[in-house]
Amino acid sequence: MTLKKIINKLALIALLGAMTGTGMAADNVGFVYVSPIGDAGWTYQHDLGRLQLEKETGVTTSFVENVPEGPDAERVIREMAKRGDKVVFATSFGFMNYALKVSKTFRKTAFVHATGYKMGKNMGLVNARFYEGRYLTGVIAGEMTKSNVLGYVAAFPIPEVMQGINAFIKGARSVNPKAELRVIWVNSWFDPGKERQAALTLLSQEADVITHHTDSTAVVQAAEDQGKYAFGYHSDMAKYGPKAHLTATTHLWGDYYVKTVKEVQAGTWKPGSVWGGYKEGMIALAPLNEAIPADVRAKIKVLEADLVAGRFHPFAGPVIDQSGKTIVPAGQDMTDDQLNQMNYYLQGVVSKVPN
Image: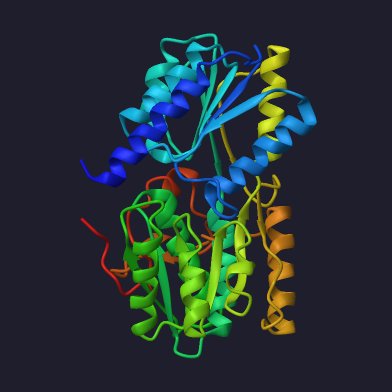
């Protein structure tokens, strides 16, 4: 075991010990985070939702951050349920099976898993339509690129990530048919070193606009250092690249957390699957960089209004994959089932899907 793993293990044991201490409210709500909270990124956005929950409902919450997607996750989730938490929010894809397993033992606890696909008698799902924001940032990228080469740092090849990649290139090609997208996989949700190296590699391959589906700010910082453009993800990352950061697809979890906990308190909660986007107020863009031309800003405002009204679908046909196969014909929109089975690249992505 490496020194880093030993330190992480000891920190986790300490956190578990703290969780079992006295003073926890009977109606406590627990949050399990895959990465450090920090001040930007995936976990940071969930933590903003947790703080909103405390403010608007008065419930006591607790969290454990930097929990690996493995047996440690099960121990954390089980400890929260064991101490009597009314709701446990497991906020990463790799927590799914562990949350489901624990939910079968603690039937009086409500479990909610973020971004997965398995449900139980007392476990529901929540996800956001990240791809809506991705399409919009793709439009901006297609307008801003000079080299017609875009770059994408990605974590794992699961449907959620593939949706973002494909929406990004589809948006870019809607305004710039010459745009192409290169993807590098880092096989981690949070590894600033790997993320930065991947970003620098893409920039060295002529990409002049890059983005990421990972948790740190490393990609935005790399673009700032190299004098290129970037889009943040999960949260506004402008302070890490004031010139580079064009905008970011941000996720808004607070209203959902408030609604869910109130339903549990009232005894009306039932496990279901929630997948919200612009229309539900779960997706929004961060403020647009002044470097974006006025006509492009206006175009984005129109698209945002259309998303809210349900007049526009980022995967409206024709949707054609990398091999030239038509996935969705003209005149139709991709269904949610199709979105959740996405395991291919669309035309315009020049990288290969990993095995």
